Image 1 (cartoon, rainbow, N blue to C red):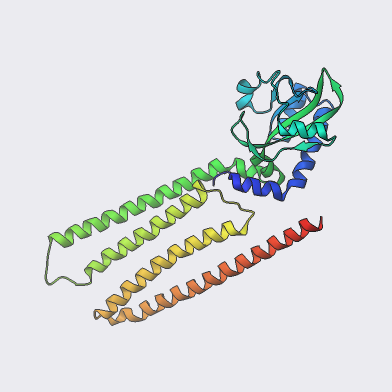
Image 2 (image 1 turned 60 degrees about the vertical axis):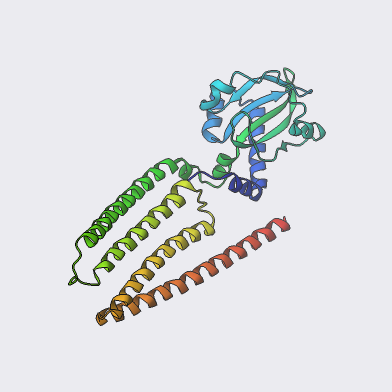
Length: 315
């Protein structure tokens, strides 16, 4: 499954804004207290993998010294730059000058890393070497994963994708195998015309086509849900979407099979009548069960959202 999308990251940020701000305030206090040595920087990276950059500004908004880069991937690119950069017009600096509290930016795309991030700025109680303000940039997606306890699962995402990719490849290979049978039977049917042949023989081709369609749709659903798209496991709507798509695929396959069986019964093979009716009833039952599941799931999520809004408003 893909990492958290920008929309999901911003939504989660506003949902856990108070917790995130409290966490960043504590990190800024730790850095201010002297956790800027190499040993302590490694400690911060280990404890808080969402940290990206740290730098200081003077009273006029000029950066003092180069960036302290927490990410190895950006250390060469960003670790030796930034000194005397003029940031006096940045909104977070203007807000910090007008307030004695820790200030935070809204989520934005970082020019340095091209990732969605937020910045926190704090005025130093005891300025050192003309350093009056401490600024920390953090990756918003990784920060939310950290707050929600989802970091380990997110780091395992590439391996999950590889597993799902193998499964999808096997399903698509099965589709090709079924289509090969279909094309072979169609070719045999068109080139060997026999008036005494079974009139129901073409239905076997349709069965193979239907099975290939169902398998292909299943592989496509897994590919989209588990590899290409972000799936928020903390929201019931994501699970409901996956189950709905899967059951829809099963419904289509069973409906076509029931229709073909009904055609066989109509052409004289009455022993297929009851199985066709049973499959039709199974389709109706699945459809009703799916409608109830979607309705109750959506209603439950609406109630949860209302409860969260009431909880926020009470604070």
